[in-house]
Each structure stands twice: as C-alpha cells, then as structure tokens.
Length: 403
Image (cartoon, rainbow, N blue to C red):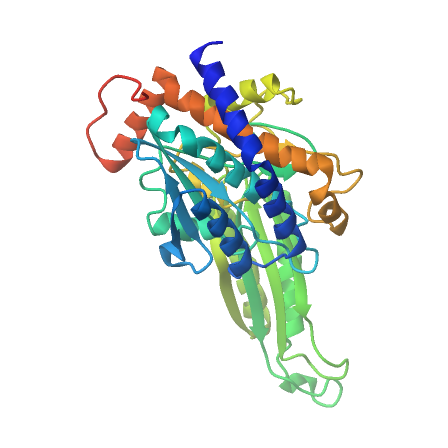
C-alpha cells in the first residue's frame, strides 16, 4: 500500500467513526427544512457538530446570520468545502440539500485528523440561500474565499456526473402601475397595466427566435387584475433570464429589459423592475481537480461518465465561486425512481439507504480528492501559484508542503 492509499484508508476509517452523526445530520435537515437566509436551525446543527469535533467555528460569518466558517489545521493549502442546507418553499429538500450539506460535513470531518500531516487547512463554509438569493455571492464579496486554493461540494442528483456546467441566471420582479377606470363607462380614462404586461410578454416571445442558443426566459404573472369590469391599475410578475455565460446573460438582460420598457411605452403605465438576489454566473469546473475526483469515484465503485463540459444543469451560485477559485461541483447520484429534482417526489428519496450512501461516498470522495491535491506536487504547486496570483503575492517555493 503506497502513501496515498494509506491516507485514503485512514480517511475512510475516520469517516466510519463519524458515520452515525453525519447521517443523523442529513435526516435532521431533511425533516426540518428552512428557506433561504432563514436556515438558523440547520446552521446550528452543523456548527455544533463540527465544533464538538474540534473545529474553530465562527457563526453568523461574513455578514449573514445563517452562514458560518469552521476550520481545522493550519496548512498553507486551504481547501474550501461548501455546505448547502436551504430548502424549497412548500416542497422541502426537493433539491437534496440535506445530502449536499451532510456530505460536505462528512468531508470536513474526514480530513480534519489528517490536516496537519497533509499541510492543509480544512475550511468548511456554511453557504445559505443557494435556492434563492445566492449566499455564496454575498460571501465572496465579504472575503470568504480569499484564502481558498480549491473549492468543492457535491450535489444530490438522480445519477453521478463530473464536469458539467450550469447557466448564468438573473431574477427580476416586474410591476406595472396604471390607472383604474370603469372598463365600459370610461375606458379612455384608464391606463391598463395588464396590457403593458401582455405587450412585454409578446415582445419577449417574439425575441426568442433571436436569442442565443441556450438562453431561457421564463416567468409567471403573480397579479393580473382584480375584476373584469375594472381596467387593472397594477400587475406584477416574476421573471428569470438564463444564458450560457455571464457575458451572454448581460446581453439577454438588456434585451428583455427593453421588452418590459416597451410595455410601459405603449400603454403609458409606469414600469418598476427590481433585481431579486444576486446574479449567478455560469459554472466553470476545474478539470484537473475533476479528474482527481473522477478517478477516486471509479475506484470507489461509482458509475461516472467521462468529464463532459457540454452538459448543463440549472443554475447555482457555486458558479460565481468557480470564476474566482478552482472549483468542482460533481453530482452524486442515488435512486429516486421517476422523480425529478425540484419536485415533491424527489424530496422523499432524500433519506433512503441510497441517499445515505451518497452522503458518505460524496464526503469520502471530496476527502480523497483533497488528499490528492495536497500530496501530488503538480496539483499543490499549481493551486498555490494560482492563489498567489489572485492575491498579488510571490509564487510559492517548489515542494509538496505535506509532511
């Protein structure tokens, strides 16, 4: 058994000692879903667990009450492990964030006893509001990732994949204010906010033929009026714009905004357009780290296809992290029948035996990937050099840094 194999074996043994606590965490998160920026109990459960394991914990970190930072070790190579734990309104953990979060905790607990030997710092980051708002973007602005050389997490899914991308996204609340009037007696006195919304929707539909491949505009009218015999004085909608890259998203936003402005111009209604949360960038996974994860996954017996950057999922604020920090965001699969993500049926599969296996395998695979990054000289040197370039510091000296 070589040195890497021995480290992997020891990490697996460490995880075995924490298995019940980690799976208990996954099930507790699943049974008690909390929404974006309100995940107080989830954050407390995780921080209490890792603090008992010896991590140095900062709660309410980076200006967010439900974010946290928990560190172990003091090595120059900082491995950032992102834990998600927010749920969806009405359908709970239909995106499997109980699996995501517990797997990240498993990885951190597994690596902590090896941190000093590997010359790493394990930095577990509690990242709220992935489903809505983008806590990782907030945390990026506040410096949470400034010292991180590599960032990682796994995400629950019906099957395993490595290397896929995601779409950049922005979310808007749209409102038109007109003037109410009797629809038959004096319609000429009214300003029809419903017509403004209709014109905008028709303009967006007409624009779809010219949108770049991969662009998606989706929306729902949340208020269309109150009575058939009253010209509506207020309408409201929620819209998402998605594109393959952040640059293409900016172009799409400008054109869609013009469609909403057209509704106001044509009817005389007043437009109010509000950005909701942070814009999410497209996900750009690091293939060198991804290959380490892929190799480990196959050695663990998981069925994973080759790296494929043409595959795209939905959207994630991990995309913003990936534009700054070498990042991986593999999907960790488990049987969920015919259920699809963001569907109530997917929720109930999140605490099955296969989901529990995904938690443990995902945690172990991130730990094994981190071991590879710390002990392989080329990996380590590359990550530290890139970190130094980001921070404007001299490049690190040659050597593995691991002891």
